Image (cartoon, rainbow, N blue to C red):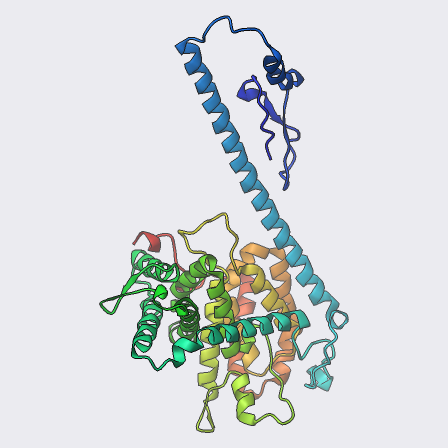
Length: 448
């Protein structure tokens, strides 16, 4: 914060109190005490002016004033940037310490009951959880409640029998979902066009869709409807497109991340849809409750059930992988044309949280090994750069402590996912590096 006193001193008379590291509040004072009394002494003069200033002296004074203003503005910007960097660094360090403490504390940190599954040597694993932490479940439930409230908000639009309302609903749904379907790695300029179109739609501006002009202002519930459908479509692309083409995660994720930053409610709805379809992204392992129908429980686990038939395990894992890969890409990517001074709306600290909580929970046969591999392959490189030594400690923990737990519950017919994860991790530890994932968007892509 700058002290804006009027004085007759030059710009060089303003000096910081300390040259130490920047903090959230900086005080600036003039370096010469006599400078603070200039304005007061000049204002206290009651005699008449002896002469008018010349044009040359006026120009000199204006130039000095401009230089002073420029200096103050530059100083203010530097302080703002420094404080933001310091705040972000402090947050990241605090997050690392918190998660490390959670992992080290084991059973003392959590009060959930131990898992019934058997560990190595037939001993029960009493130091891992079955359930996720209460605070995470509260977050999960808040997102689900907000999603349901959003649906209720536009219920009038979706249930309307009016032909005009039906037409508006269809136009809005196409305007929200078609651009997401068009996301690809063809060119950075094309991706920017898609992003701008989605942003315009959410901002209430008219956009062209199907040869017609469409706007959320056509209906009072239009914006809620578009936000919900847009978030739903992003997750569906992870479930389908990314599941089939892993590299598609990055262009979809960077658009989703950019929209999330500008329209936070869309981000919350993305999480709500993702958690509902893939509870392992919380991470959350639903438990079977007495009186619950088996089909309902299977749906809670993420399986698709049609006509009382449950989808094949391979297809289930493929869909879960697609959604985890999309999530792992979102948390590390920023829209390149956004405000770089803003922090990521859902950044790598959530990736660290997810990984730490997964390791504090009992592994699930086939599922845990598959999703750990997908997650680390996509954002392991980013986590390595962000958390460095702490991240390598976590990988060693996975190898030495968690691998035996996974192996103990994995049948011979399901060893493929475990072996793939084990080989990937051992190679990374051997080379002390995690490679950049295939399909990662480089700077050259944005020039295309």
